[in-house]
Image (cartoon, rainbow over all chains, first blue to last red; front, side, top):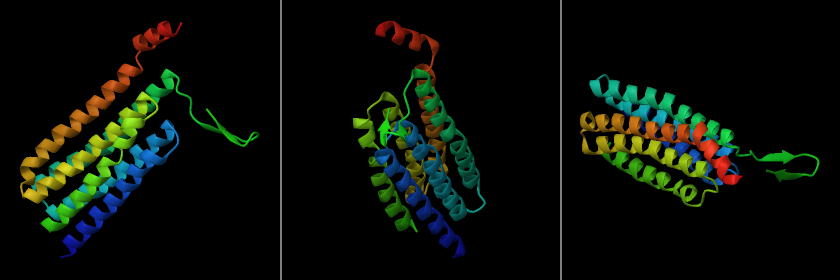
Length: 107
Length: 96
């Protein structure tokens, strides 16, 4: 019973984090700020959902594989986003900055 | 409990559909690749939930592992290609 309760709690929390990340991809103003929404928020949401599934499963072979998937996502998703951001800054994509003297955004 | 997984999978499908906006209207190429990467990583969780809906997680978890590795490699290879020296030199020659 307590296993099911914690599983539902983790899955709902993870889906809320993924919703926040998904809205952040659409709403944030700049490429470099959108990478935050993908790398941090989505990774935390996926870790929560798969952790909830591990709690629901118990100690079996499938839960070990789910643990491998969780560790792989926790490594791979920030690495991929970092590689994309590095490619963008090498190509010369300018980040959006706030200019304090003229009170407006510059590119 | 299967009903809960079914409803959470439906909610996750709606969440996955949201970054398609950025894929369609993203200003630069990197925005599109970033949104496609986000869709791919969320699909991994959707496949896991599908395994619990059908009650066959021991089969679906292998598909999940293969899909995770494929999505990560695709994103990484495109990023390395775009930041490679040869591509940048070609772009510079085209501009000049």
